[in-house]
Structure formats: structure tokens, C-alpha cells
Length: 82
Image (tube, rainbow, N blue to C red; front, side):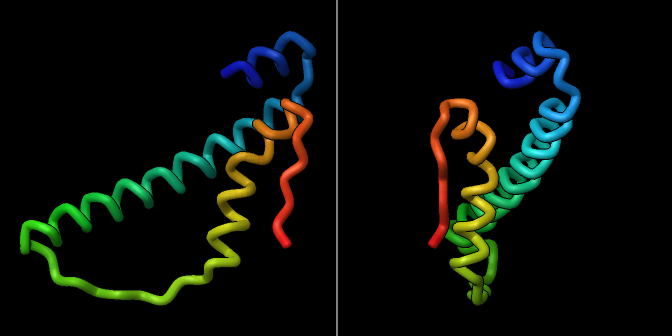
């Protein structure tokens, strides 16, 4: 919300669009995390079958970096994935 206020104060439409995109991506990511948590809770109660799946750690790390990138940039912190 601080980034949005700052962009509005600076009349910076580009930054607003970037923050909106980051928020949209974060919401999608959070929704996936909540789904996984719900599935885990149901599995712990024995109501949901365990279905292991392969995932790309590189992709997961890159997506996580992208979620926090705008916030880091606003604090003049550079994030990188190697």
C-alpha cells in the first residue's frame, strides 16, 4: 500500500501498473499456497489422498523473487537468482 501511495503522490502510472501486476501475481501465488495448506490439512485428517508431484525449484525460486522484487527495489535492495 505504501508503494501505491508513493506512486500516486509521484503521479507515476508505470509504477502503479507494475505494483498492480505484482499484487495480482502475489494473490495468485498466495491462493496456491492456501490451496496446498488446505490439501495438507485434509490429508492429515485422512480425508485426502497423497499425490506427490514433481516441481521445478528454479521456477519456484524465481517466482518468489518476483513477488518480493518491487518491495526490495523500493528499499534499494537488489535481488538476484543464480
